[in-house]
Length: 597
Image (cartoon, rainbow, N blue to C red; front, side):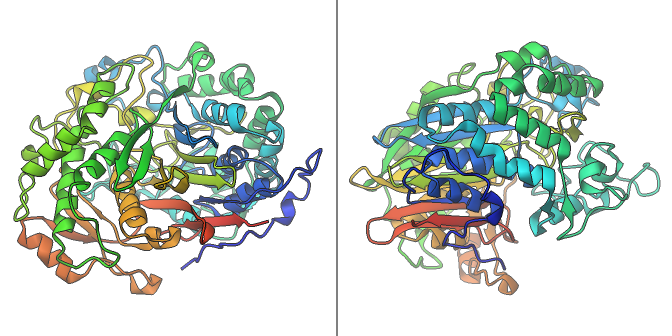
């Protein structure tokens, strides 16, 4: 199993990035899903850049290599802690095109929200990076894209995580699945061997554009193979030279719109030109004697805080939890109430989410939830979600965090949604476009578990769909930066982030310890309490059989699952230990780097 580096080793490929002056190097730490990209982020701290500069460089790198998760064609959320201790959340979630509405899918159930042009939201990632850098960046914008440009032009190796993702696109592999074992990549396709053309071929092989990157010789590339993205390098270069406007206007926008419309979508040049990131105050709550911050809806940050609000009334978890600690049961129950609350949320500009978020965090709400939790039993799903509305099982993401010695910290989660999004890569600029429309609820379409779509998340022109993404930052009791985490894993992001806070605050764990601790998940529907199992070959310790039996005795439908359903990253600072960073050992190639000067 890959063990993340904790000390920065500057990359020789970055030697060309000489700043015009020689600012003082900064101490700090960076973590993300690709070690090479974490090194790039820390290298910008070494050059005197801020955490904002490091984040822009990392996001550009991750979108180039881990392109199945994120890139310019996606969107997400950022949580930013300024050096003065103020916070803001940045919503750069993709937005529905102006000509898109739910009736398109209601009237024709064969139309896909997952594949093709109708699945594509207006991409938001670059407007998010622009907002972060404009306020907090110190290095020139152009410099931050040079490592990614070099990787896209000269080539990068197919790492183990990318190789696994590529091979999950083979229909016979079924790809990533939901809790019922149903394929997410091929949910709308007939899987009948011998009857469907190309059944045994990945879309990375059959698609004329994607195949140039992933199967140039007609078969999927293997681990260690070198590949390039020359068209995406052109997009990176244009954005480096001319800023995000080069993406949202002009030739790149024309390439994107033409590709979407060729594949049946309705995206327009006006949709691209008018897209803006929304900057809002962050949500916060006092947990124990720390303060936890999260972004507003349509992220699920309020649900992480809501669960912590409930857990605040119980005794803290100990460093080594008893296998039959009642707090484990209470945690599962608190999560389930939060996932029930999630069915009420939607885009803050189109729903009453702002009022709901405030209500979730009231002490009286937590007291009421605790009054509903029975220490001796669990309940049926309608106890937590009385309306029976769907709890969306949304898809994978890229998670990135950076902090610097000035107290600036940035936690980002960004995504193209399903692996390789809508499966559209634009021909001229190599932008892999999202399938974020699938995160909306469609009236009349029950989800994979048979539950009713949530009206708060119906498709409306320009609206942004609800997301599980929940980047977090924690300040210590004195109000100084202590911990930041971000997580990938669809609906399991929420439960993972809750446990990251418990590990960091209640258990006092280091960044790596917080990531390595086993996780559990229960989102009400389906009625499954998933707990991570031992993986001896990877040196991973899961939940004990005693914990399984204890939860089962209370009525939980406990199922052991392999590691990797959620993947996080974290950085931590303490006056005693200094900077720590860690990547999640659940994946092969996650990484971290510390700029220790």
